[in-house]
Length: 241
Image (tube, rainbow, N blue to C red; front, side):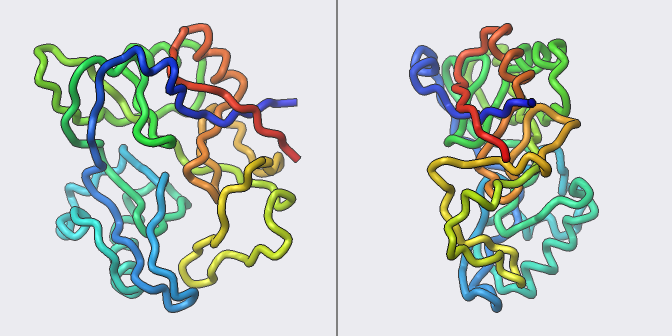
Protein backbone atom coordinates (compact mmCIF):
# COMPACT_ATOMS: atom_id res chain seq x y z
CA UNK A 1 0.00 0.00 0.00
CA UNK A 2 1.42 3.46 -0.89
CA UNK A 3 2.66 5.58 1.99
CA UNK A 4 2.28 9.35 2.22
CA UNK A 5 4.07 11.89 4.41
CA UNK A 6 3.28 15.40 5.56
CA UNK A 7 6.31 17.56 4.66
CA UNK A 8 7.26 19.92 7.47
CA UNK A 9 10.13 22.29 8.15
CA UNK A 10 12.95 20.78 10.19
CA UNK A 11 13.96 23.74 12.35
CA UNK A 12 16.80 21.85 14.02
CA UNK A 13 18.55 20.95 10.77
CA UNK A 14 18.07 24.39 9.22
CA UNK A 15 19.52 26.17 12.25
CA UNK A 16 22.97 25.30 10.91
CA UNK A 17 22.41 27.64 7.97
CA UNK A 18 22.67 31.33 8.79
CA UNK A 19 20.81 32.81 5.86
CA UNK A 20 17.31 34.15 5.39
CA UNK A 21 15.08 35.74 2.76
CA UNK A 22 11.97 37.89 2.63
CA UNK A 23 10.05 37.42 -0.60
CA UNK A 24 6.56 37.46 -2.04
CA UNK A 25 5.06 36.29 -5.31
CA UNK A 26 4.92 38.94 -7.99
CA UNK A 27 1.17 38.79 -8.53
CA UNK A 28 -1.90 37.54 -6.67
CA UNK A 29 -5.66 37.55 -6.81
CA UNK A 30 -7.22 39.99 -4.36
CA UNK A 31 -8.95 38.82 -1.24
CA UNK A 32 -12.73 38.61 -1.13
CA UNK A 33 -14.62 41.33 0.75
CA UNK A 34 -17.69 39.94 2.52
CA UNK A 35 -18.80 37.07 0.31
CA UNK A 36 -22.52 37.46 -0.58
CA UNK A 37 -23.02 33.78 0.30
CA UNK A 38 -21.23 33.35 3.67
CA UNK A 39 -20.51 37.01 4.61
CA UNK A 40 -16.82 36.24 5.28
CA UNK A 41 -13.93 38.45 4.16
CA UNK A 42 -11.02 36.14 3.43
CA UNK A 43 -8.03 35.10 1.33
CA UNK A 44 -6.34 31.73 0.94
CA UNK A 45 -2.82 30.54 1.78
CA UNK A 46 -0.86 27.89 -0.10
CA UNK A 47 -2.40 28.30 -3.57
CA UNK A 48 0.84 29.24 -5.34
CA UNK A 49 1.53 29.00 -9.07
CA UNK A 50 5.05 30.37 -9.63
CA UNK A 51 5.15 29.15 -13.25
CA UNK A 52 2.08 31.22 -14.20
CA UNK A 53 3.16 34.48 -15.84
CA UNK A 54 0.70 37.40 -15.83
CA UNK A 55 3.03 39.87 -17.58
CA UNK A 56 1.06 39.70 -20.85
CA UNK A 57 -2.22 40.74 -19.22
CA UNK A 58 -3.14 44.36 -19.96
CA UNK A 59 -4.49 44.60 -16.40
CA UNK A 60 -1.53 42.97 -14.67
CA UNK A 61 -1.23 45.96 -12.30
CA UNK A 62 -4.55 44.91 -10.75
CA UNK A 63 -2.76 41.85 -9.36
CA UNK A 64 0.14 43.66 -7.69
CA UNK A 65 -1.44 44.94 -4.49
CA UNK A 66 -3.09 42.74 -1.85
CA UNK A 67 -6.53 44.03 -0.87
CA UNK A 68 -10.11 42.76 -0.55
CA UNK A 69 -12.49 43.27 -3.45
CA UNK A 70 -16.27 42.80 -3.78
CA UNK A 71 -17.35 39.45 -5.21
CA UNK A 72 -18.17 40.68 -8.71
CA UNK A 73 -14.77 42.36 -9.13
CA UNK A 74 -12.97 39.34 -7.67
CA UNK A 75 -14.72 37.05 -10.17
CA UNK A 76 -13.85 39.38 -13.06
CA UNK A 77 -10.15 39.35 -12.14
CA UNK A 78 -10.16 35.61 -11.51
CA UNK A 79 -11.54 34.93 -14.98
CA UNK A 80 -8.81 37.07 -16.56
CA UNK A 81 -6.24 34.74 -15.01
CA UNK A 82 -7.99 31.43 -15.57
CA UNK A 83 -6.77 30.83 -19.17
CA UNK A 84 -3.16 31.16 -17.95
CA UNK A 85 -3.52 28.82 -14.96
CA UNK A 86 -3.26 25.01 -15.07
CA UNK A 87 -6.55 23.48 -16.31
CA UNK A 88 -9.16 22.82 -13.68
CA UNK A 89 -7.39 24.33 -10.67
CA UNK A 90 -9.27 26.24 -8.00
CA UNK A 91 -8.40 29.93 -7.92
CA UNK A 92 -9.60 31.16 -4.53
CA UNK A 93 -9.03 34.67 -3.18
CA UNK A 94 -5.34 35.28 -2.52
CA UNK A 95 -4.02 32.77 -5.09
CA UNK A 96 -0.43 33.78 -5.96
CA UNK A 97 1.32 33.75 -9.33
CA UNK A 98 4.78 34.32 -10.73
CA UNK A 99 8.20 34.18 -9.13
CA UNK A 100 9.08 34.90 -5.54
CA UNK A 101 10.76 38.32 -5.46
CA UNK A 102 12.72 39.78 -2.58
CA UNK A 103 16.04 40.18 -0.75
CA UNK A 104 18.08 37.28 0.62
CA UNK A 105 21.35 36.95 2.50
CA UNK A 106 23.72 34.33 3.80
CA UNK A 107 23.64 30.57 3.29
CA UNK A 108 20.13 29.17 2.86
CA UNK A 109 21.29 25.58 2.46
CA UNK A 110 20.14 23.07 -0.19
CA UNK A 111 16.51 23.78 0.69
CA UNK A 112 14.71 26.41 2.69
CA UNK A 113 11.18 27.30 3.73
CA UNK A 114 8.96 30.35 3.98
CA UNK A 115 6.51 29.64 6.74
CA UNK A 116 5.55 25.98 6.93
CA UNK A 117 4.12 25.57 3.45
CA UNK A 118 6.43 27.13 0.84
CA UNK A 119 9.57 25.20 -0.11
CA UNK A 120 12.54 26.45 -2.12
CA UNK A 121 15.20 24.13 -3.53
CA UNK A 122 18.72 25.09 -4.57
CA UNK A 123 19.19 24.14 -8.22
CA UNK A 124 21.51 21.22 -7.50
CA UNK A 125 19.01 19.79 -5.00
CA UNK A 126 16.16 20.17 -7.49
CA UNK A 127 18.16 18.47 -10.23
CA UNK A 128 19.15 15.71 -7.81
CA UNK A 129 15.51 14.93 -7.09
CA UNK A 130 14.80 14.77 -10.83
CA UNK A 131 17.71 12.37 -11.29
CA UNK A 132 16.27 10.20 -8.50
CA UNK A 133 13.04 9.81 -10.50
CA UNK A 134 10.76 12.08 -8.46
CA UNK A 135 7.62 12.65 -10.53
CA UNK A 136 5.77 15.86 -11.32
CA UNK A 137 8.29 18.50 -10.24
CA UNK A 138 7.94 21.67 -12.30
CA UNK A 139 9.39 24.92 -11.01
CA UNK A 140 10.13 28.61 -11.50
CA UNK A 141 13.37 30.37 -10.60
CA UNK A 142 12.94 32.54 -7.52
CA UNK A 143 14.12 36.12 -8.03
CA UNK A 144 16.05 36.42 -4.78
CA UNK A 145 18.42 39.38 -4.54
CA UNK A 146 21.66 38.36 -2.83
CA UNK A 147 24.42 40.91 -2.24
CA UNK A 148 27.16 38.32 -2.67
CA UNK A 149 28.89 37.66 -5.98
CA UNK A 150 27.81 34.50 -7.84
CA UNK A 151 24.78 33.84 -5.61
CA UNK A 152 23.12 30.42 -5.57
CA UNK A 153 20.04 29.82 -7.72
CA UNK A 154 16.85 28.72 -5.97
CA UNK A 155 13.77 27.24 -7.58
CA UNK A 156 10.23 27.16 -6.24
CA UNK A 157 8.45 23.91 -7.13
CA UNK A 158 4.91 24.45 -8.38
CA UNK A 159 3.19 22.11 -5.94
CA UNK A 160 -0.38 21.78 -7.20
CA UNK A 161 -3.47 20.72 -5.30
CA UNK A 162 -4.45 17.08 -5.56
CA UNK A 163 -6.40 14.76 -3.28
CA UNK A 164 -8.54 15.55 -0.26
CA UNK A 165 -8.76 14.94 3.44
CA UNK A 166 -11.06 12.05 4.29
CA UNK A 167 -14.48 13.09 5.66
CA UNK A 168 -13.88 10.88 8.72
CA UNK A 169 -11.53 13.52 10.14
CA UNK A 170 -14.10 16.33 9.82
CA UNK A 171 -16.11 17.48 12.84
CA UNK A 172 -19.57 15.85 12.90
CA UNK A 173 -21.27 19.25 12.55
CA UNK A 174 -19.04 20.45 9.69
CA UNK A 175 -20.87 22.57 7.14
CA UNK A 176 -20.20 22.12 3.41
CA UNK A 177 -18.13 24.71 1.53
CA UNK A 178 -19.83 27.99 0.70
CA UNK A 179 -21.76 27.58 -2.54
CA UNK A 180 -20.76 31.09 -3.66
CA UNK A 181 -17.02 31.43 -2.89
CA UNK A 182 -16.06 27.84 -2.04
CA UNK A 183 -14.65 28.64 1.41
CA UNK A 184 -14.47 25.66 3.79
CA UNK A 185 -14.89 27.09 7.28
CA UNK A 186 -12.85 24.50 9.13
CA UNK A 187 -9.59 24.27 11.06
CA UNK A 188 -7.03 21.65 10.10
CA UNK A 189 -7.66 18.47 12.14
CA UNK A 190 -4.97 17.49 14.65
CA UNK A 191 -4.76 14.06 13.03
CA UNK A 192 -5.38 14.45 9.27
CA UNK A 193 -6.45 11.40 7.25
CA UNK A 194 -6.04 11.34 3.48
CA UNK A 195 -8.85 10.16 1.21
CA UNK A 196 -7.07 7.29 -0.59
CA UNK A 197 -9.38 7.33 -3.62
CA UNK A 198 -8.59 11.00 -4.33
CA UNK A 199 -4.77 10.80 -4.25
CA UNK A 200 -2.73 11.34 -7.43
CA UNK A 201 -0.54 8.74 -9.12
CA UNK A 202 1.31 11.08 -11.50
CA UNK A 203 3.32 13.10 -8.97
CA UNK A 204 5.32 12.62 -5.79
CA UNK A 205 4.65 15.99 -4.14
CA UNK A 206 1.26 17.72 -3.92
CA UNK A 207 -0.88 19.89 -1.70
CA UNK A 208 -4.10 18.63 -0.16
CA UNK A 209 -6.99 20.04 -2.17
CA UNK A 210 -9.11 21.22 0.74
CA UNK A 211 -6.12 22.26 2.93
CA UNK A 212 -3.54 23.83 0.64
CA UNK A 213 -1.02 24.49 3.41
CA UNK A 214 -0.56 20.71 3.86
CA UNK A 215 2.22 19.59 1.52
CA UNK A 216 2.42 15.82 1.03
CA UNK A 217 5.18 13.65 -0.37
CA UNK A 218 5.14 10.00 -1.41
CA UNK A 219 7.49 7.37 -0.05
CA UNK A 220 9.52 7.73 -3.25
CA UNK A 221 10.03 11.44 -2.51
CA UNK A 222 11.02 10.70 1.10
CA UNK A 223 13.57 8.09 0.03
CA UNK A 224 15.03 10.43 -2.62
CA UNK A 225 15.46 13.22 -0.08
CA UNK A 226 17.17 10.84 2.33
CA UNK A 227 19.50 9.39 -0.31
CA UNK A 228 20.54 12.91 -1.33
CA UNK A 229 20.95 13.84 2.35
CA UNK A 230 18.87 16.99 1.91
CA UNK A 231 18.45 18.35 5.40
CA UNK A 232 15.51 20.55 6.32
CA UNK A 233 12.40 18.37 5.92
CA UNK A 234 10.71 16.23 8.54
CA UNK A 235 8.28 13.53 7.42
CA UNK A 236 5.09 12.80 9.37
CA UNK A 237 3.28 9.78 7.96
CA UNK A 238 -0.39 10.37 7.21
CA UNK A 239 -2.92 7.54 7.29
CA UNK A 240 -5.20 6.92 4.33
CA UNK A 241 -8.75 5.60 4.28
